[in-house]
Image (cartoon, rainbow, N blue to C red; front, top):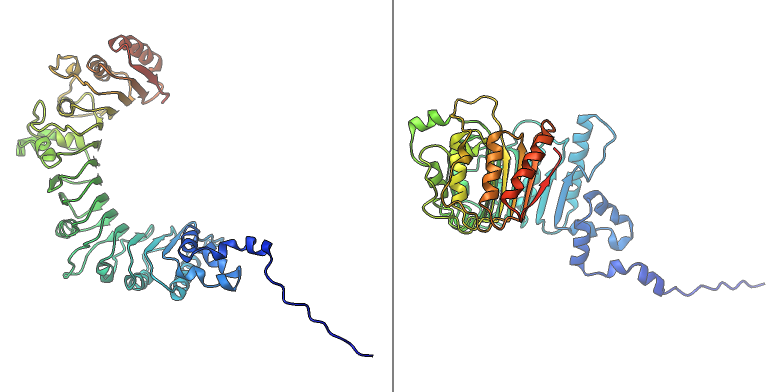
Length: 431
């Protein structure tokens, strides 16, 4: 008896299979975009889908190592650190292709020396974006090879000590620089900013080593700063349009005024001809009130349409500086005032400032006003009445008190003020 073995013909991919694996036939750059939007853990796991997918993850140009990538059940810091180092080493070892973005931001990673090795690796690629956020331990000092990355467009450093090599000539293509919780010397800071001619965005928060901020950036458009410093000045910043600035320490205007009567207001705005949005945070209004304060700026801020000010309504000098700013913005459309009451102050108190007849204070374009953190004291209510009386096209006034204490009396007072502007809608927000 003979046995005949029949082989089944090889099955061609069915239409259903082709439909199911349509994603594998996408162009390579599209697959890279898809994988780049996944946590690196899931991108690497895609290698088990098929042989075709085995090394696709190894060409993605964006590598992000953060808390979304890894979940460790162990609380052993040494175990977590070793695991993180091994994973990042493995990914960089198998990666095959250019790396355009490298982000390291894991809450359990210290400023270990392994980071030096990783930065050296990415510096050999055409890296365009680097984010280093070291959440634990001492300030991490990036290696000198980081400053050789001349293709950088965005650089973001957190908890770092910046000390570039002497031969550092700047980042010629850098457009965005974000420095937070950093240590940097005065000379290094000035050289860094002035040697980045393409810089458009600058964020500087909680820094040490710099007391006099000199911003020399011809293409700068956005500037956000918060920290402790003594002085700030702008040079060659004609394109700067969005500024948010906060001084995190109270200052004594009487002591500083005795040393220098020069106007901080005039010097601050002299190189900001096209500013459109200004946020004055914390105690920076006190800084602007130092020295001579004019009734208004000689060169009006004609482009400024949004102004936010944190103010002590009982401080005469702060009120004077605020009034100067309001008069100097003829096209202001949106105004936010945040009350900053002081329990004790050596400054002269102002209880009737906003009651006075401030000539030519008509805000012809002001549409939206928000006043926050008030308690209903006389100086605050006088300011609200002043605004309502001088804003003919005001559409909306939003008031948010600091607490519920005296809430009913405040609401009754606001209803009485409403007569000053019959077209404005008054919105009261619970604290």
